[in-house]
Length: 168
Image (cartoon, rainbow, N blue to C red):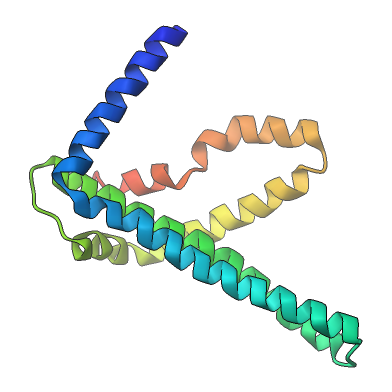
């Protein structure tokens, strides 16, 4: 496909997407709340890092215990951000699907779709979070990471996971 055809197809998709959003403005709530809840999760991590740095500088004798708590909090925040993103992606895709089928949607409809699949979302959070960490480790070896990301990249985005629920 040529560059011009790609631009034309992208423009067409954008116009259709905007048509759906203009018909059902509740769809805009999902990305907004996703960003806000992600900011809260990252804020918790930021506070933990700040507390860790203060304790390290003051050389408190409980540094080892603080290290373990910090690591656990960082892992929790990391997976929380991934979980939040996937939940709202599933909710958005589900609501968009309903809206495209001429059904009136509410914010709660999307959340219900996501909550019906919370176990699958938790499992996908663990998989995608673990793969993300592995990719970060592989980034130390630039060629290997690029090769792996090139081969597995299309399988990773949560929108593929989200669209799985449209077939149900």
